[in-house]
Length: 427
Image (cartoon, rainbow, N blue to C red; front, side, top):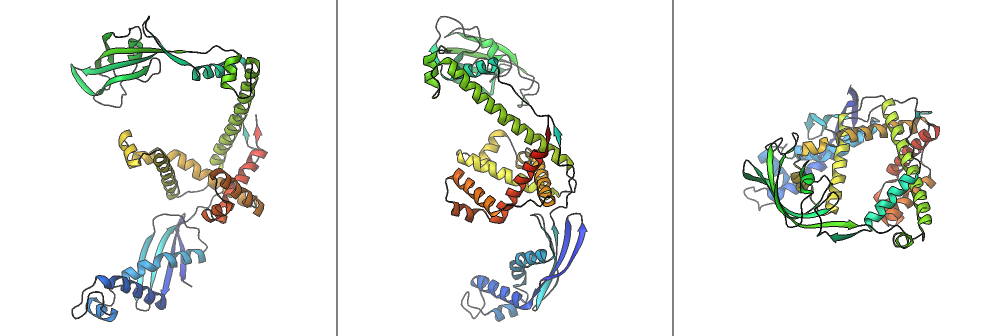
């Protein structure tokens, strides 16, 4: 056995003392020797052919000790923490070699452990959930969105630009008579009323005609992100090349048959929209219930949680974000430069969400433990099938990618949340 002793240093911090026997140490030293000898020149021997004993005589018998110990630390530390019954999280490990010789070595390692938490009052939680009703006004709004999506664009020749129009413009901004960086655009499509430009810009473009050239005076907002422009008065020289407006289709049966696969009349279409809205509102209510119950569980959780758990979660979230960016053909470094972010500020954006996710997971794991909630083999098979269906993979391939023990924990956590929802008092 490798474990000599296990001592609690602080909350969620333990020190284990571990011994590595001489046989294992010598094997590790020999592995290091075979790897490093290729780089060593010893007079009287071809490069890479010097015996281990000769190298140790020349450089000292401890020449390979450090690399050999580095080779053995992970395995023996893992065995020791398992023997000590510790659940260790990924965090800084402080290593200290207390004794080393040809007969083996002893080291101490300070590790961070999974927190001990408590939770009570998770049954019968009272919450008020948002609820929406389907009304004629909401149905009309959805129909208006559909008409907007089905609209066509027409050039405007006989009137000035107005709110809702799209204008194609050249513009250039000047501060104290000098053009400023980022203030110029050519053949730019701007929808008036969209709020794309600083306050006042779009309002002052409205009222002007095609081919008109004019100047407008504005001030940048006090909180504008470019410091040298924040709160400063500027002028923009503008030319309108085109004015375009949207033509909405008539709300009739022909329109309905164009936009819907299930309805052929306006009356049927309104009913279809009502059913869709009702389903959307139901899902939104369920999401609101789960979110509020999650917040309640986080509040009820008691325990001191290692900062490393939050940092690890942030790292996971940043990695997921990086993968999404790459799927869109964008590198994280490029995105950060474009957004003016540092690694620290990017990670800071995830701090609050990461903390909530860690606490919620701990709360649900504790509930699963208290209630003896476990995943059955049927649960596991069903979950593997769901994942396989989502990613269009073979179930066996999914099993190879996701260890059963990890998936069992996820299923148990999901069941724990179901218990909380089933016993909740929702108003």
